[in-house]
Every structure is written in C-alpha cells, then in structure tokens.
Amino acid sequence: MSSQPLKVRWKARRNALFASRSFQYWTARLPFSRSIARSRAGSMFDHIVGFSYSRVLLAVVESGLLEHLKDGPIAASRIAAEAGLSDEAALCLLRAARALDVAEEVLPDQWMLGQQGAVLAANEGAQAMIRHHRLLYRDLAEPLELLRKDRREATELSTYWSYAGALQGTAERGRETTEYSQLMAASQHFVADEVLATFRFPKRGRLLDVGGGHGAFLKRIGAAYPGLQLGLFDLPEVVEAGRDGLADAVGRDRLSCHPGNFFEDAIPGGYDFVTLVRILHDHDDGPAQDLLRNIRESLEPGARLMIAEPMARISGAEPMGEAFFGLYLWAMGSGRARSPKEIRSMLLHAGFSRVRTVPTPQPVVASIVLAQA
Image 1: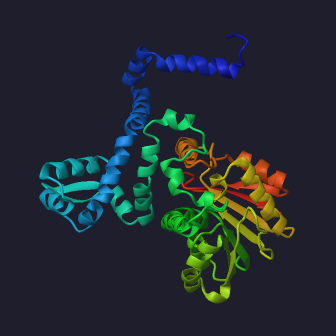
Image 2: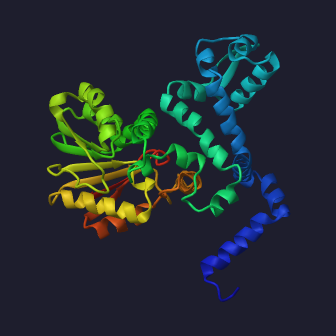
Image 3: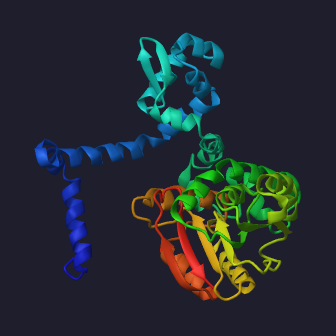
C-alpha cells in the first residue's frame, strides 16, 4: 500500500472509514455532520430504488393522470374510473405521485398537480422521453447480459433507434427516420432553451444545423435571431419531411435545405456557424472523428462549430453523462458520452483551433463546446 500514490492511499482510507458502520452511526448523531450523513444516505437510497420512481412517472404519464390533475381538485374514485383502475389502485398511484411532488392532496380526497407535476404536465418532450424509456428498461433488465453482448447484436433500443443504421443505407429508412425525428423534435427544446440561455449567437450571418432532423432546434434559433439565415442538413427523407413546417416557422426566404449523408457527402459550404446538437455522442469514435473532419473541411477560416449535448465528467451532472447516457448509448449499439476534454482533442485532431467549453446553467441537459476553424 505504501508504494501507492498519496491520492490513492487517501481515498482507500476514506472508503474504509465511510464503510464503517460505527462511523456511519457516529456522523448521523453529531449535529454538524447529521445533515451530510442524511444527504448521503438519501442519495444512496435514491440510487437503490430509483427504478421505482421512474416506473411511477411512466404510470402517471400513460394513465392520463397529469391531465386529470390539471383540471382538479379531483377525487381518487374519479381518477380510477378515468384510468381504468380500482379505487385502491388509483389511490396507490396518487400517493406514489405525491411522494415525488407530482401530485398533491389539497383537501381530503381532493387531488391536484404538485409542483413537479405542473412542470411535467407542461413539458411534452419530457413526457415523450418517459414513454420512450420503456425500451431502455427492457434492455437493462439484465445489465450484465447487455454489457456482455456484442454491440452489433439487436436490442430494444437499437431496433428502435435504427436511424444510425439508416445512415449506412438500411432498408425502410423513411419510416425509421420519421420515428427518430419525431421523438427528437418532442424533446429538442430542452437543449435549444439551454443553448439560447447560455450563448449569444451573431445577429447576422449563416447558420447550418447538421443532423438537424425536422428543424426543431432551428425553429428556436430562428425565432430568437430573426437576422440569421438558416440551413438544415440531414438525410433526404428527413429533410423532405421537415422542410415545409420549418419553412413556415422561420420563413422560406431564410431557409436552405441540404439533403445528404454527413458520413458520405460534403457538408455544404458558405456557412459561418455550424451546430451539432445531440449528434456527436450518437456515434463511435471513428465515425465521430470523420464527421468533425468533414465539417472542418467545409468551413472557411474563422467560422465556428458548436457541439451541444450531454457530456461526461461535467461537475454536478456526472450521473447523466456516464451512468445514464453511458448505458443508454451502449444499448443503442453506437456512440458514447464524451468529456469536453475528449471532444477538444477530437476537434484539434480534425483541424479546428481555439476550442473552449461554454458553461451552461443546467449541464444535466447539455454542455457546450465551441471551436473555430
């Protein structure tokens, strides 16, 4: 042990101390350490039973409980009739939702939305992701079996997220990419709002969103920056499906649509700002590096690239980067969450310069890395 670095020896002593039952009881009794001990215990308990919380949210969303509570106060028996549950089962669900602040009993047997419920009811993107995660739960039923699989083997998520396969020419691309883009559009405003709250785009110029789906991100940017000319680059069937709705939202005279495959086709030139929103982490290191190189080749000196997505090793958002997205992308069969340091290295290797990380208010939603050509 003495040959180990000081940092390793210190952490080994710390872990041995934290594992001691007597130390745990001692810290729980002392006034100055009681709140810390309680917080650590609560955090571990949330890790242990978090699957149950996510199941409660799925039941809340799929039962229509949010809509019923939005119009409350409402009795449990009324909710039972609307959701096809027994009175006892409806009350069980309501109590579980109350524990998560999704529901609130404002009077005896009179229920309304709780604070978290009000937020969730107003966020269709969050509800779409809650529904979607049933696929991940199936894949994670036996997590070691999932990790032992060849990543090329089919999973629930890889079957659904066959968008990555569509990039390589998989059959039935139209149906599959439509499903992908619809879910992305439902949740894309999370990242768009985080980006807009963090970064000031140029008031004039030309911005290209690579892999932009049906244009959900461009709609938000276009509304906030009416002087920008906008470009969308994605697969032909994706661009075709999203073109009219995006043009109606931002104005046809501002929009240029570019159908193509960003692994095979040149990225359109003439843009002074390019965005990659929740794209890089979907791809393994080799293809991701190729994509960055392809974008760099399209840019004139001084043009900039923004990468916005959940990232690994971000202080305060570590679980989202590697505990959630690490396993999610593993189940998807492609990609991984990367730290800003790793992304910086890839950008420099692709020929970019002046790479910097832009802190965001809610890194659990997205972090930003900005690079200049």
